[in-house]
Image 1 (cartoon, rainbow, N blue to C red):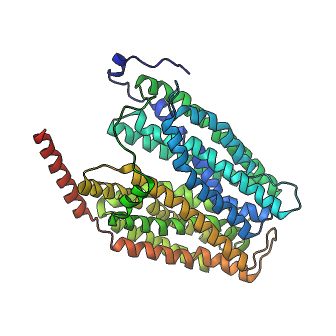
Image 2: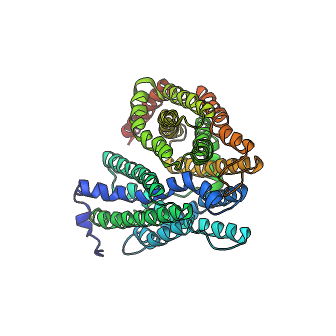
Image 3: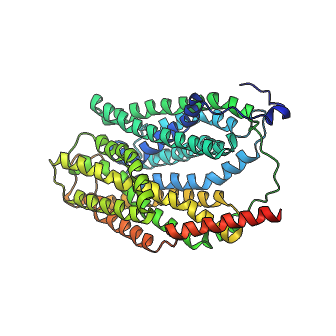
Length: 471
């Protein structure tokens, strides 16, 4: 890496725009996090029970502990990266130093130690999960902050964000595609996960290195390695909680997102059990791939419908379709494989809606807060959405594991009892349905309609004009 920071005169010259190669390099930074997070969401619970031999509750506890720790360590690592001062900037050293440990600890998640003790294996996976979540945050949190630091241009930020999200989805789909190929090529169950984990570990590290190498010259040219001087005083955690809970519209968005996200995570974690034990399929990866992969196309559809109809209206449509498909899964019988795959494609429309609409509502909430307080506080609202997303994921996975445990699910058994199969079907049908209905109910009372939002923007514009005239 070059170490010379540009002179002050150079910093005032117009920065060169990101080339296509530069945008691809920036987006590559989210391939690894997208790949690893998606594979863990779909596969880790069934791996821990069927391959590692943990009880469902023990397996669910491993995932819940890891996710809660992930939520806890975010602000700590964010604070440390903010305070980092090196000749290479604040963010790049974290990404570079964390990349290889990130890949190694991800791979260690898929090893089954040759230990007789279930307790020893349980604590092995707890420790590895905690370590992986630390290094996931070490590389991903500094990376995501680069968007704001590399450019101040509104359109360029939008482009970089689009490349980041597209790369994350590419990584997620690639992991499931690899899983489909490996399960058809490798017979031994433990070897399948070991090979898949090893390949994804390598493929998750290399794009991070490409991101650093490809974007660092832009950071140097734009003098973005060190923070600008600011007099802004950071709010305490208690003050941040007061800010978000004082915003009624934000509470509705949180509720909508949590219910929809819980339904999504329950579906993702139970699909492998449903496909394997109820439908009798050799691999669940095609079903997962149809849900996740088709959702990319559906996001374009949801975005188009949202512009034409409104956010609440498209949410009703998308989640309504999802509910019908989810209930239909409860009644699908073994052998109706084509129907299963068709329903997975239909569900992807609802999944895309759950991804797009709540996050599209959040900027409206931020602008309402700005109108009331005169301050732009995106960081606080986005941080709490991410925090609640992780807590919701932990809760959803643990609830699924409890249901499997108390229904008599037997780890490493190829056939399950009727009671266990019923629990699997209930958690892929009726339970997500109730959560999605709750999300729809909250959407009905969400206060920021299209008309209200237009009024907010007009009032903000008028305030800006008045301040410019007074200045």
